[in-house]
Image (cartoon, rainbow over all chains, first blue to last red; front, side):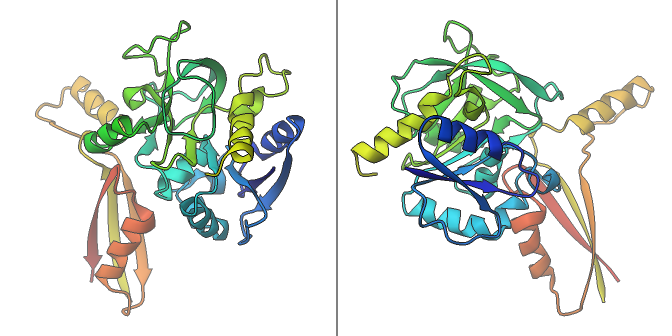
Length: 231
Length: 78
Protein backbone atom coordinates (compact mmCIF):
# COMPACT_ATOMS: atom_id res chain seq x y z
CA UNK A 1 0.00 0.00 0.00
CA UNK A 2 1.78 3.08 -1.27
CA UNK A 3 0.67 6.65 -0.47
CA UNK A 4 1.81 9.59 -2.61
CA UNK A 5 2.11 12.72 -0.48
CA UNK A 6 2.07 15.83 -2.66
CA UNK A 7 4.42 18.70 -1.77
CA UNK A 8 3.42 22.11 -3.02
CA UNK A 9 5.67 25.11 -2.43
CA UNK A 10 4.46 26.19 1.01
CA UNK A 11 3.14 22.83 2.17
CA UNK A 12 4.27 22.19 5.74
CA UNK A 13 2.54 18.99 6.86
CA UNK A 14 3.95 16.61 4.26
CA UNK A 15 6.73 15.39 6.58
CA UNK A 16 4.21 14.60 9.32
CA UNK A 17 2.01 12.76 6.81
CA UNK A 18 4.85 10.62 5.46
CA UNK A 19 6.04 9.91 9.01
CA UNK A 20 2.55 8.85 10.13
CA UNK A 21 1.98 6.58 7.14
CA UNK A 22 5.38 4.88 7.52
CA UNK A 23 4.89 4.59 11.29
CA UNK A 24 1.68 2.66 10.57
CA UNK A 25 3.61 0.27 8.36
CA UNK A 26 2.65 1.52 4.92
CA UNK A 27 4.79 3.03 2.17
CA UNK A 28 4.83 6.75 1.51
CA UNK A 29 6.70 8.92 -0.98
CA UNK A 30 6.86 12.64 -1.56
CA UNK A 31 5.46 13.83 -4.87
CA UNK A 32 6.65 17.22 -6.13
CA UNK A 33 3.90 19.48 -7.46
CA UNK A 34 5.46 19.45 -10.95
CA UNK A 35 5.08 15.71 -11.36
CA UNK A 36 2.46 14.30 -13.67
CA UNK A 37 2.49 10.57 -13.07
CA UNK A 38 0.68 9.26 -10.00
CA UNK A 39 -0.04 5.80 -11.39
CA UNK A 40 2.28 3.95 -8.98
CA UNK A 41 0.41 5.17 -5.89
CA UNK A 42 -2.59 3.45 -4.34
CA UNK A 43 -3.75 6.63 -2.61
CA UNK A 44 -2.89 10.34 -2.78
CA UNK A 45 -2.62 12.76 0.14
CA UNK A 46 -2.73 16.54 -0.22
CA UNK A 47 -1.15 17.89 2.97
CA UNK A 48 -1.73 20.97 5.08
CA UNK A 49 0.24 24.17 4.90
CA UNK A 50 0.12 27.36 2.91
CA UNK A 51 0.51 26.29 -0.70
CA UNK A 52 1.81 29.14 -2.85
CA UNK A 53 1.61 31.38 0.21
CA UNK A 54 -2.20 31.10 0.16
CA UNK A 55 -2.09 34.11 -2.17
CA UNK A 56 -5.36 35.02 -3.86
CA UNK A 57 -7.32 32.39 -1.89
CA UNK A 58 -6.26 29.28 0.04
CA UNK A 59 -5.61 26.55 -2.50
CA UNK A 60 -6.49 28.69 -5.52
CA UNK A 61 -3.06 28.60 -7.12
CA UNK A 62 -2.17 25.04 -6.09
CA UNK A 63 -5.23 23.88 -7.95
CA UNK A 64 -3.53 24.74 -11.25
CA UNK A 65 -0.19 23.09 -10.53
CA UNK A 66 0.71 20.25 -12.92
CA UNK A 67 0.17 17.48 -10.37
CA UNK A 68 -3.43 18.56 -9.77
CA UNK A 69 -4.48 17.66 -13.32
CA UNK A 70 -3.45 14.13 -12.52
CA UNK A 71 -5.06 14.22 -9.05
CA UNK A 72 -8.36 15.19 -10.70
CA UNK A 73 -7.98 12.40 -13.27
CA UNK A 74 -7.14 9.79 -10.61
CA UNK A 75 -9.99 11.00 -8.39
CA UNK A 76 -12.44 10.60 -11.24
CA UNK A 77 -11.05 7.11 -11.88
CA UNK A 78 -11.86 6.21 -8.26
CA UNK A 79 -8.43 6.38 -6.61
CA UNK A 80 -8.59 7.36 -2.95
CA UNK A 81 -7.61 10.99 -2.40
CA UNK A 82 -7.45 12.73 0.98
CA UNK A 83 -6.97 16.47 1.46
CA UNK A 84 -6.11 17.63 4.95
CA UNK A 85 -6.52 21.30 5.94
CA UNK A 86 -4.92 23.21 3.04
CA UNK A 87 -5.38 19.99 1.05
CA UNK A 88 -9.15 20.21 1.72
CA UNK A 89 -9.11 23.82 0.52
CA UNK A 90 -7.31 22.73 -2.65
CA UNK A 91 -9.89 19.98 -3.27
CA UNK A 92 -12.74 22.52 -3.09
CA UNK A 93 -10.91 24.94 -5.39
CA UNK A 94 -10.36 22.05 -7.82
CA UNK A 95 -14.12 21.27 -7.65
CA UNK A 96 -13.43 17.71 -6.53
CA UNK A 97 -15.48 18.63 -3.45
CA UNK A 98 -18.30 21.20 -3.34
CA UNK A 99 -18.41 24.42 -1.31
CA UNK A 100 -15.58 26.56 0.02
CA UNK A 101 -13.64 27.27 3.20
CA UNK A 102 -13.67 30.86 4.37
CA UNK A 103 -12.27 32.83 7.31
CA UNK A 104 -12.99 31.46 10.79
CA UNK A 105 -15.98 33.22 12.27
CA UNK A 106 -14.01 34.48 15.30
CA UNK A 107 -11.28 35.87 13.00
CA UNK A 108 -8.64 33.94 14.94
CA UNK A 109 -6.24 31.26 13.75
CA UNK A 110 -7.40 28.19 15.66
CA UNK A 111 -4.75 25.79 16.91
CA UNK A 112 -6.12 23.22 19.35
CA UNK A 113 -7.49 19.73 19.76
CA UNK A 114 -11.21 19.43 19.08
CA UNK A 115 -13.83 16.70 19.44
CA UNK A 116 -15.24 15.34 16.18
CA UNK A 117 -18.00 12.85 15.48
CA UNK A 118 -17.74 10.38 12.65
CA UNK A 119 -21.00 10.46 10.72
CA UNK A 120 -22.76 7.74 8.78
CA UNK A 121 -21.31 8.47 5.34
CA UNK A 122 -20.32 6.87 2.05
CA UNK A 123 -16.69 7.77 2.73
CA UNK A 124 -14.23 4.94 2.07
CA UNK A 125 -11.39 6.42 4.12
CA UNK A 126 -12.52 5.11 7.49
CA UNK A 127 -14.47 2.00 8.41
CA UNK A 128 -14.99 2.92 12.08
CA UNK A 129 -18.63 2.92 13.26
CA UNK A 130 -20.68 6.10 12.89
CA UNK A 131 -20.82 7.96 16.17
CA UNK A 132 -17.16 7.37 16.98
CA UNK A 133 -15.78 10.48 18.69
CA UNK A 134 -12.24 11.48 17.76
CA UNK A 135 -9.96 14.10 19.26
CA UNK A 136 -7.89 15.61 16.48
CA UNK A 137 -5.87 18.81 16.24
CA UNK A 138 -7.00 21.67 14.05
CA UNK A 139 -4.70 24.48 12.91
CA UNK A 140 -6.31 26.86 10.47
CA UNK A 141 -7.48 30.38 9.73
CA UNK A 142 -9.87 29.47 6.91
CA UNK A 143 -11.80 26.41 8.06
CA UNK A 144 -15.30 27.84 8.05
CA UNK A 145 -17.06 25.53 5.59
CA UNK A 146 -19.78 27.08 3.48
CA UNK A 147 -21.95 26.03 0.55
CA UNK A 148 -25.35 26.93 -0.86
CA UNK A 149 -28.53 25.34 0.61
CA UNK A 150 -29.00 22.94 -2.33
CA UNK A 151 -25.44 21.66 -1.99
CA UNK A 152 -25.86 21.23 1.77
CA UNK A 153 -29.03 19.21 1.23
CA UNK A 154 -27.25 17.03 -1.32
CA UNK A 155 -24.34 16.47 1.10
CA UNK A 156 -26.79 15.45 3.83
CA UNK A 157 -28.99 13.28 1.60
CA UNK A 158 -26.07 11.50 -0.09
CA UNK A 159 -24.19 10.75 3.13
CA UNK A 160 -21.26 12.97 2.14
CA UNK A 161 -20.77 14.59 5.54
CA UNK A 162 -17.99 12.56 7.12
CA UNK A 163 -17.01 14.50 10.24
CA UNK A 164 -18.79 17.07 12.36
CA UNK A 165 -17.41 19.19 15.18
CA UNK A 166 -19.08 18.07 18.40
CA UNK A 167 -19.06 18.32 22.18
CA UNK A 168 -17.00 15.99 24.35
CA UNK A 169 -19.90 13.54 24.66
CA UNK A 170 -20.35 13.36 20.90
CA UNK A 171 -23.41 15.59 20.81
CA UNK A 172 -23.45 18.06 17.91
CA UNK A 173 -24.84 21.42 19.06
CA UNK A 174 -25.56 24.44 16.82
CA UNK A 175 -22.28 26.09 17.83
CA UNK A 176 -20.03 23.07 18.22
CA UNK A 177 -17.84 24.22 15.32
CA UNK A 178 -15.16 26.57 16.68
CA UNK A 179 -14.76 28.13 13.22
CA UNK A 180 -18.45 28.70 12.43
CA UNK A 181 -18.63 25.93 9.81
CA UNK A 182 -22.04 25.35 8.25
CA UNK A 183 -23.84 22.37 9.83
CA UNK A 184 -20.70 21.84 11.96
CA UNK A 185 -18.98 20.31 8.95
CA UNK A 186 -15.34 19.36 9.52
CA UNK A 187 -15.00 16.89 6.66
CA UNK A 188 -16.88 15.87 3.53
CA UNK A 189 -16.42 13.38 0.73
CA UNK A 190 -17.56 13.17 -2.87
CA UNK A 191 -20.59 11.11 -3.88
CA UNK A 192 -18.44 8.12 -4.72
CA UNK A 193 -16.73 8.29 -1.31
CA UNK A 194 -13.14 8.07 -2.59
CA UNK A 195 -12.27 11.77 -2.17
CA UNK A 196 -12.18 13.04 1.43
CA UNK A 197 -11.46 16.58 2.57
CA UNK A 198 -11.09 17.40 6.26
CA UNK A 199 -9.83 20.36 8.26
CA UNK A 200 -8.47 18.38 11.29
CA UNK A 201 -5.02 16.78 11.10
CA UNK A 202 -5.14 12.98 11.63
CA UNK A 203 -1.47 12.65 10.60
CA UNK A 204 -0.39 14.52 13.73
CA UNK A 205 -1.91 11.95 16.08
CA UNK A 206 -0.81 8.57 14.77
CA UNK A 207 2.39 7.71 16.65
CA UNK A 208 1.14 8.64 20.14
CA UNK A 209 3.73 11.36 20.71
CA UNK A 210 1.16 14.16 20.51
CA UNK A 211 -1.40 12.93 23.04
CA UNK A 212 -3.51 10.28 21.38
CA UNK A 213 -3.65 8.02 18.32
CA UNK A 214 -7.07 9.05 17.04
CA UNK A 215 -5.71 9.73 13.55
CA UNK A 216 -4.87 6.09 12.87
CA UNK A 217 -8.32 5.14 11.54
CA UNK A 218 -8.05 7.57 8.66
CA UNK A 219 -4.99 5.79 7.24
CA UNK A 220 -5.61 2.18 8.26
CA UNK A 221 -9.26 2.44 7.22
CA UNK A 222 -8.46 3.09 3.59
CA UNK A 223 -5.75 0.42 3.64
CA UNK A 224 -8.23 -2.15 4.92
CA UNK A 225 -10.73 -0.98 2.34
CA UNK A 226 -8.23 -1.26 -0.52
CA UNK A 227 -6.96 -4.64 0.58
CA UNK A 228 -10.40 -6.08 1.22
CA UNK A 229 -12.58 -4.71 -1.52
CA UNK A 230 -12.61 -3.15 -4.92
CA UNK A 231 -13.42 0.56 -4.85
CA UNK B 1 -2.75 47.86 -24.88
CA UNK B 2 -5.84 47.74 -22.72
CA UNK B 3 -6.29 48.12 -19.02
CA UNK B 4 -8.88 46.21 -17.03
CA UNK B 5 -9.94 46.75 -13.46
CA UNK B 6 -11.52 43.85 -11.63
CA UNK B 7 -13.33 44.07 -8.31
CA UNK B 8 -13.83 40.89 -6.31
CA UNK B 9 -16.18 40.97 -3.31
CA UNK B 10 -17.89 38.42 -1.07
CA UNK B 11 -21.23 37.19 -2.40
CA UNK B 12 -24.36 38.33 -0.59
CA UNK B 13 -24.66 36.41 2.66
CA UNK B 14 -21.01 35.32 2.70
CA UNK B 15 -19.07 36.34 5.80
CA UNK B 16 -17.12 39.57 5.08
CA UNK B 17 -15.59 40.48 8.45
CA UNK B 18 -13.58 43.45 7.15
CA UNK B 19 -16.68 44.98 5.56
CA UNK B 20 -18.89 44.38 8.60
CA UNK B 21 -16.35 45.81 11.03
CA UNK B 22 -15.81 48.88 8.84
CA UNK B 23 -19.56 49.47 8.59
CA UNK B 24 -19.89 49.28 12.37
CA UNK B 25 -16.88 51.56 12.88
CA UNK B 26 -18.32 54.17 10.51
CA UNK B 27 -21.55 54.01 12.51
CA UNK B 28 -19.56 54.54 15.72
CA UNK B 29 -17.99 57.62 14.12
CA UNK B 30 -21.46 59.08 13.70
CA UNK B 31 -21.98 58.48 9.96
CA UNK B 32 -25.58 57.58 9.27
CA UNK B 33 -27.34 55.83 6.42
CA UNK B 34 -24.61 53.31 5.65
CA UNK B 35 -26.47 50.14 4.71
CA UNK B 36 -23.62 47.90 3.71
CA UNK B 37 -19.85 47.96 3.34
CA UNK B 38 -17.99 45.32 1.38
CA UNK B 39 -14.23 45.04 1.38
CA UNK B 40 -12.72 42.91 -1.35
CA UNK B 41 -9.91 42.76 -3.85
CA UNK B 42 -8.94 45.11 -6.64
CA UNK B 43 -7.05 43.61 -9.55
CA UNK B 44 -5.59 45.73 -12.35
CA UNK B 45 -4.45 44.07 -15.54
CA UNK B 46 -2.53 45.48 -18.49
CA UNK B 47 -3.10 43.28 -21.49
CA UNK B 48 -2.62 43.25 -25.26
CA UNK B 49 -5.54 44.28 -27.43
CA UNK B 50 -5.90 40.64 -28.46
CA UNK B 51 -7.19 39.82 -24.97
CA UNK B 52 -10.98 40.21 -24.90
CA UNK B 53 -13.38 40.98 -22.07
CA UNK B 54 -14.60 37.40 -22.45
CA UNK B 55 -11.05 36.19 -21.77
CA UNK B 56 -10.91 38.31 -18.63
CA UNK B 57 -14.27 36.92 -17.53
CA UNK B 58 -12.96 33.40 -17.98
CA UNK B 59 -9.84 34.26 -15.96
CA UNK B 60 -12.06 35.56 -13.16
CA UNK B 61 -14.23 32.46 -13.13
CA UNK B 62 -11.27 30.09 -13.23
CA UNK B 63 -8.76 31.73 -10.94
CA UNK B 64 -9.14 35.34 -9.86
CA UNK B 65 -12.47 34.83 -8.10
CA UNK B 66 -14.18 31.77 -6.60
CA UNK B 67 -17.78 31.89 -7.88
CA UNK B 68 -18.91 29.81 -4.87
CA UNK B 69 -18.19 32.66 -2.48
CA UNK B 70 -17.32 35.74 -4.54
CA UNK B 71 -18.81 38.11 -7.10
CA UNK B 72 -16.70 40.03 -9.56
CA UNK B 73 -17.15 43.03 -11.80
CA UNK B 74 -14.92 43.98 -14.70
CA UNK B 75 -14.28 47.52 -15.81
CA UNK B 76 -12.22 48.65 -18.79
CA UNK B 77 -10.11 51.78 -18.88
CA UNK B 78 -9.50 53.51 -22.21
